[in-house]
Length: 141
Image (cartoon, rainbow, N blue to C red; front, side, top):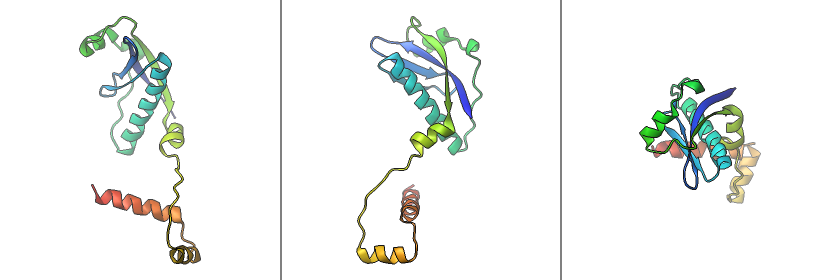
């Protein structure tokens, strides 16, 4: 499902700052406008993905025309010159599958006797490792 939120872009000397006024001051930046746009998509996807994962309420996006960029610029103490509002859209589920939930290959070494015993029992090595890592992480919190 596509999510669309307004983002305020502020041009600075050598970069762009991006602020999502509906998302608790969520912000990012980029050296160029293209970098800032890319970072804005990544930032929005990450915020919405984590909010959903943690069961947090996700604010309804504002209508772009209702965003007062001059007021926000004043609050942030940045110049409004060169600033603009743009809608940023992302399919969070597709983005998460590609970037956040992407599997990473790991190489590890175990004793041959353990490998043989696990293979005889048709144990899924990846699943066991994931479960053990999650348990270890949860123990440390």
